Amino acid sequence: MNIPVLTIVVPCYNEEEVLHETTKQLSEIISQMIKENLITDKSKILYVDDGSRDKTWAIIEELNGVHPFVTGLKLAHNVGHQKALLAGLEVAGKNSDCVISIDADLQDDISVIKEFILKFHEGYEIVYGVRKSRETDTFFKRATAQGFYRFMQKMGVNVVYNHADYRLMSKRALEELSRYKEQNLFLRGIVSLIGLKTTEVYYDRKERFAGESKYPLKKMLSFAFDGITSFSVAPIRFITFIGFLSFLISSCVGIYALVIKFMGHANTGWTSLMVSIWFLGGLLLMSVGLIGEYIGKIYEETKGRPRFAIETDLYTDEMVKSEVGA
Ligand code: UDP
Ligand code: MG
Image (cartoon, rainbow, N blue to C red; front, side):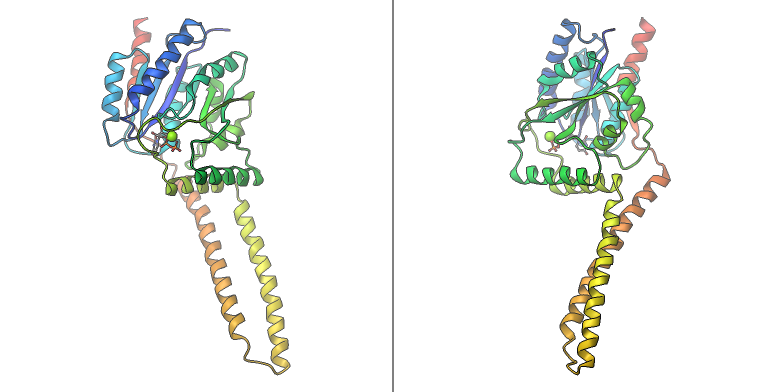
């Protein structure tokens, strides 16, 4: 098998504090793998600057000047982790045999990168990094994440348990990925739809190296909600079911009320009236909101807007230059 070109794609949003350290550690691993003939010396670290407001891009440019492996992609504005990652994958996929995606903060153990590559050499097209433990995450984050994975699996969405976006994808897997054109990206779910020859590699998740999480609770919840509603209409069905159930219950209550009335003990209706009005009102609003969520998604999809805009692409420029030079 030919020696592959590897590109490590790293989405960065306000990551000025971690970039130097990340570069140091990733370069070491890359150099070592080049020495062992596992990857070629054309392998790169591609930082995707997702419209950061701090010095992230300046640092990427600086590192690009001094470091042979470092290259960068600057997006025109902040599009969020998933789309930034997608931008990186699309750009890197054109010139690489395999691509590894990883967060900038070194929370995912980079020493398993070599295992990823070994699996790639064995012929796997997608290798998932799976967290063995989440000891460094707060209890709350652990519990919500677990609930989320369970819920997704129950709904028939086949996400790999405890896998974040740390994985290797071959060129072929990336080509398949590029055929999924949806706006509401939930990459983990989509990648598991691709199929191909797949395996998992286990690692321990660490503390963020520096800086703070860019996924506060609100973003996390909305990410989970997007993940669910982009992949399944089960919640709508569930609402229909609840609606049906509450209709049945209300009918019984209605019959009961009529019977009471005709038996002459009227005027007892106030409580049940209030309860049912509020119950049904809440249910209706919830259903309308949920259906609205899906309609909103349809609306976004029909516009077919570009998912990201690239401002500067050092990577492709370098590739073109090196080909002309060769
Ligand atoms: N990120 C990004 N755009 C955003 C938010 C985050 O590219 O709008 C990047 C961020 O720089 C990091 C990765 O996504 O490399 C994961 O974010 P973070 O580590 O803050 O999330 P956590 O690990 O806390 O879930
Ligand atoms: Mg992190």
